[in-house]
Length: 133
Image (cartoon, rainbow, N blue to C red; front, side, top):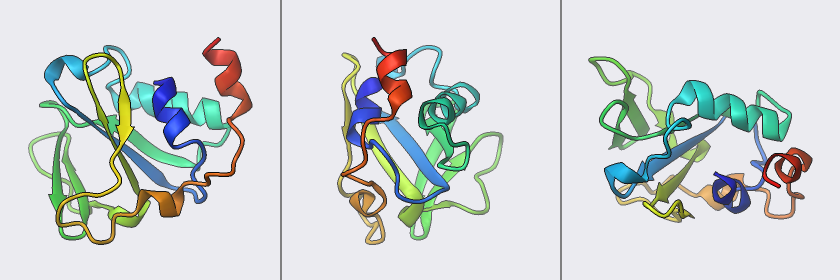
């Protein structure tokens, strides 16, 4: 979890969507793979509920599909009508060891540029230091 924050320290716009693709089923961190837990944790760390719109793992329970206009999710029986636009999305992979890596590109997603919405010069959020000591 702290690796995710270290790679995308501070979005430079509100409404960012964090998407995490586990490399294997065992790569999903138990307890934070659900958006109702992961998203508030990020709101708390950034001290800003507007900064992160939602954060989630793509799993069999939350299926993700890359479309021409963004990433669509299936939370229930149908995929969301409005996908999360690539210009608002930061995508990571996660492995079984807990390593989280930023995906710099996505196949067939020319509008995906995570570095454009990451403030590389922002300091590490104060709460990250206190929560992960």
